[in-house]
Amino acid sequence: MNIGVVLFPSKRIQDFANSYRKRYDSKYALITPHITMRERVSVDESELESIVSELNKVAEQTKPLALHLQGARSFHPTNNVLFLKVMPTDEMEQLHRALHSNGLEHTPKYDFLPHITIGQDLSDVELFDVLERLKMEDIRFQEDVTKMALLYELENGAWSVYETFRFKQH
View 1 (cartoon, rainbow, N blue to C red):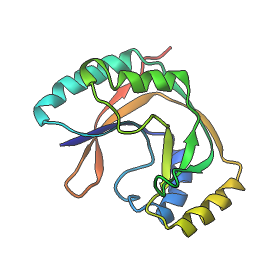
View 2 (view 1 turned 30 degrees about the horizontal axis):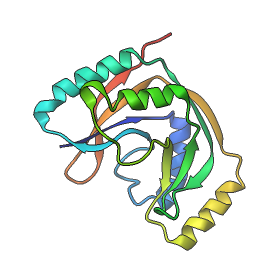
View 3 (view 1 turned 30 degrees about the vertical axis):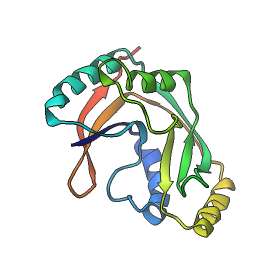
């Protein structure tokens, strides 16, 4: 089965992201707006119990994360993905490292660049058109994220929450 670990922003940020995703994200119906902390990986169901245990340990050692979104960017020319930029913080980097070490060893395919995808599979023309419009908007959000979620992929490609892990409170 395929699993991944994500942070879900507040409904306010999700609503903003979805206002673009509805039109520009081919995977809009498959997953809600999120920040990928651990990309999709295939595991045997028998491994889930130990993964959940490791994620509980990571959550217990993590304080709520400050989330700052600022503007929109693109991964062009690598691929035509449009995203809301999440400003990286030391705490987010530490969480990312913790989710790839100890009992959760995994080498990520990409460097960690926190973001919320709002468009993908766009033509070059469409990508640049939407990006230019987004650059004229003052996109800024700030909030704390208090939990992470372990997701699993369904047969139709949609993602569902397997378990949620609360970060330790101050």
